[in-house]
Length: 440
Image (cartoon, rainbow, N blue to C red; front, top):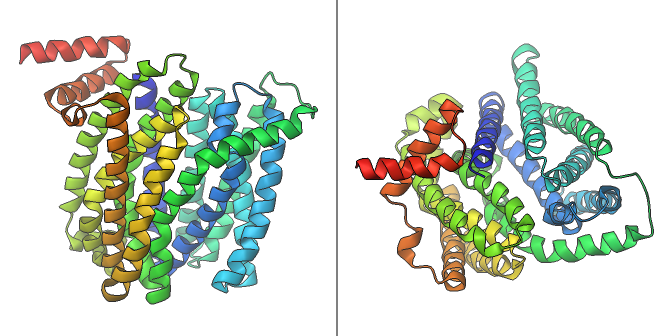
């Protein structure tokens, strides 16, 4: 598992680097207002994709080892088409956007939904390397096409983001479809198609509700800021959020492998020790990175992203404690999802939402993007506190067992040495840790 986590983290670091490059390109060449428009488009896409996950999502990974992939893919595609069509129309009415915006939203969301469905099925068949490569390809294509358009094409319009997204999602979609055809599953539309659709919906409703609520906690502030301020403010806020949330690559890498292992494990209790280690290592590494990010001066942010973006530093400072707490929440969410205890994740998201909504309503009008950051941080802390309480009660864990110590420092050193040498098997990392502690 250690090697897989490290590979996942490297891939996600590369993906996060590509995403950071996209943020930088859109901020640098489109300005704060253009960056805000892109952020709202991405948020609208993410909102529709969350509802696509109500028939699919994590249940695709859960059912892929147990069912014919084609009986899962067809109902997931049908649901995605309906959600994207109805959702795009709903956003047209709700936000009073242009018809061309709705067309791009529908097209990009459909391609991304189909691609993520395919990728989820491949991950469910334990093709993690393929899954990671496809995600990295999509991010790399998006960033590369934007770079070409902005620099060589001198095309500094928001629309360039839409056209780049078509190719960035469309090419990996076609590749992933070809990879599905290479699986041993025979193409068939059996009598189990309807039963598979019901099974997907049943599993996803329980698992995905917490994801929808979590999205509201993460991105509701964008809509409040757009309403009370303007796209310029949304652009500045999005840069601060993107920089701080990038550190979640560590916890998301660990949680991906953890979830796959949990759904395959016959003895779920055996996964407790890796979960505890993941929490401690995540807490240690995330805290160090966030503290370093907090030291970056406003002048550096302005120099990198543009003069308007020095205002993002207060956002980073206010988000910092909540981002650290949410990194731990990501591990715990994956743990409870792997056990099928989705109600705990849902309850944590509801508690966070009870902070997010009044926080945005009360704090954003007087304090703008700083109020948005404060509301988000408080929401993250409340959700994390609930999950930690549930995890400790379920496993009789003392608080001290969740806190990193000297062993975690040695563990990171040993893991890095192992990865660099490529010679030691993963099981020897533990022995290396013990040796380092004894030398101390």
